[in-house]
Image 1 (cartoon, rainbow, N blue to C red):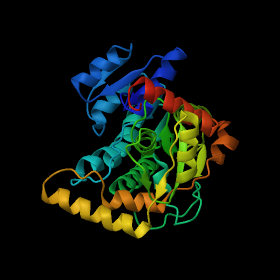
Image 2 (tube, one colour):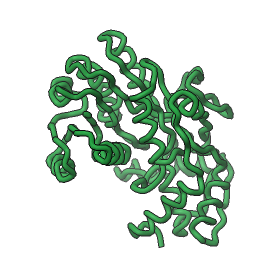
Image 3 (tube, rainbow, N blue to C red):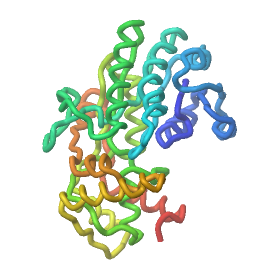
Image 4 (cartoon, rainbow, N blue to C red):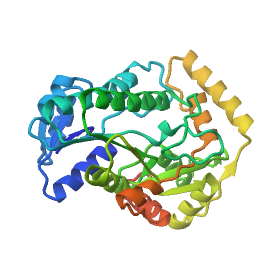
Length: 323
């Protein structure tokens, strides 16, 4: 098995599962530190960039299947080029490399954000994109998905896409999880009214493996185990953690104005802003996804939300991330 992005949250968990079931794993490393970390786990390492077809093809030689998990997920970025190179160029490069190396199937980790569901609707794999983007991340992942599928058609490479919503569980302290942990620790009490969609990290990995085994080439599979209003998700997290805390919701207009002011001030000071307009726009839009196709066609079974949040809280406490 070949894996890119092996030191990220999804990639790390995927490699763990592959090793546990006895697979030999080859992983791409972009740095000496990543190479050392992967080698320490018993993984064969190949060096290179995620958008270098030659490096990818060389690492994939002799591998039956490949997982392209590498990607850049960030908001409030000033220079979009590194994200474009990895999320767009890297997606197409992985497909071309797989074809060159004779890989039977490539599983590409896309994102639920590429669905582009119109405001207030539930996104499915068949949803027609709204036609505008909430963030640079959403744009580059959508362009990368299209680039991967176009390259697959051009070179005849069997390619399946998985589209996870916000991944939560042990090892995940960013994204939506960052807000949950900050709320439980008392560092954040104010939130905007929105809806969030989450998938358990273990379900996300199982979805990848099932997509490789049972997925239809050229198709994508949303991985989403729960969709909750933000206040319900936070209240559930407080119940599971045994914390006496209630979230306070602020008006949507106030959140937008405040984010613009903070972003402007930090940009003037040449500092990375903690919040920005695209972050608030993404939160205010919210996300509602239907992950049932993966259940019907791949046989995926989703974890109960309470269990997912419980695992996340236990891990965060063990890591000292919350009191």
